Length: 628
Image (cartoon, rainbow, N blue to C red; front, side):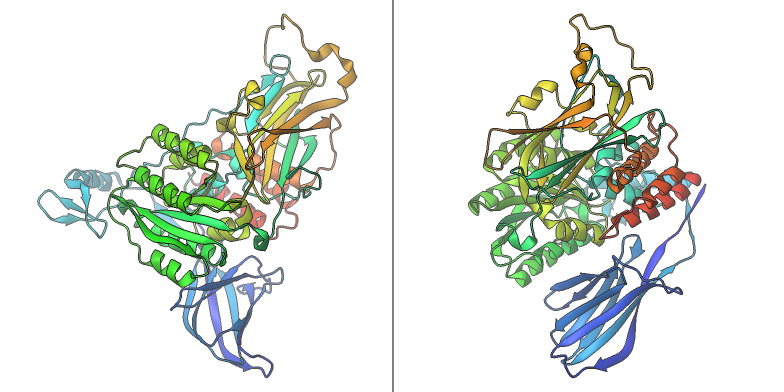
């Protein structure tokens, strides 16, 4: 079987003309990004100016007109890099900048011819198995190869997939008469979306359990109002028609965390915990990891501190806690790292938390940032053991961020578990643009937690609603009694984070409810005084240093909107797409064509171009699935 997929290339041409300007004290770089052979300008392209000696980077993004500029550029030689999600990275080296010069740069995006991807030949696979069995799998060489028993070296690539995903049993419809309460922990992780994107850009279907619909929805920002009351987040509710089932309605619930400018963030005490084991040698692992964290280093200042801990066969401190103002020292420490050895993750976690505790900043952001493919295989490695360790560490007031990298042996379930237990968040970094999204554009949401143990409980009115289904959040479900139990751990919300949840509901008279026996002791159906309300949604959260939760609630009426917001429609489009990828039994009449129409009509402001990228990804998925 053959798969045809488009490979996009980002090409950058450097105009040789250097314009001299009397009023320019230092050098400048200006330019416009456009699509090749068309007048269409492109926004959202990241252009970086890199000093090849100090490794310090300046980054900007093309605006709505495709324009970008670097001003006050000190004289010297620079590298210029251009990146855009789904496009090949461009690099131009040795660009000379002198005082009073302006360098004009033009970026053009070109579509290449289709590439044919062949299926693995079974005879070749059989030969691979023979080679694999004759290798000493426990002794990788420094180059990442393995030695045969007779001492000769064999190079091979693992064709089988050992990636690990926790199984997901989709939420089913529940009858309100029997189960009026739905309770879950918020989830602001977005790793599933970028991981799914990696599969599709590679021309393959994503693993079914790699598709967590709530994480796909929450990858995107929504235009919810900023909090104006005493609470650290606002609440928005909306009711409209369900796009994939015309007989059902869709409830949209949105939370908006308080936004903070990066300059107003409290000082950070960060410990980079980096996996430098042999499994991290691929270009999309340790090399990408280094470039990702360089972006973060360049966003931090004198008040922030960074330490670097690495782990492979053993854990070690590479860089003691250092002011982020000393960027050269920090970046050089990362650049010197190389991959090799087995993976002792438990020892690394212990050391990283100890270093963070030694440099704890009262009132600051104290956090361990774990960057790995999650393939722990020496010492403590089981999900249960790692989770127990992290649960103990979170009591110290040190939070955890997990950054996942790579493919083939990627262990999604381990990283999801660690982030969940460590009062943290989890992102999958498949390219430098995703790193910029997580570590630059959303730095406040990624690094600063503003509310912890955030829980949601929705009570449906049995006089109005027949049945309901929570879309996603299968691994975040809580018991009804957990909502009022302040000892029960739940999710965290970062500065500026949005959280979105969808319920598919069946109103009275619109469809049959799941069959249940009548309740012996009755229910609320005999209380018509609330028949105008569809549901009551309650939220509990704790302040960072608090142990007692605070409660807020909102009600939603049963009036169905005829013209829904862009927030409602775009979230519905993403949910519909996720259900198609999962081949969900609840996808109803969902089609790729319907997803495209809904997403295109609700793209909104789309400041960073993430929604536009989603539309292109949906189109690519149509090709991938058509050829499988």
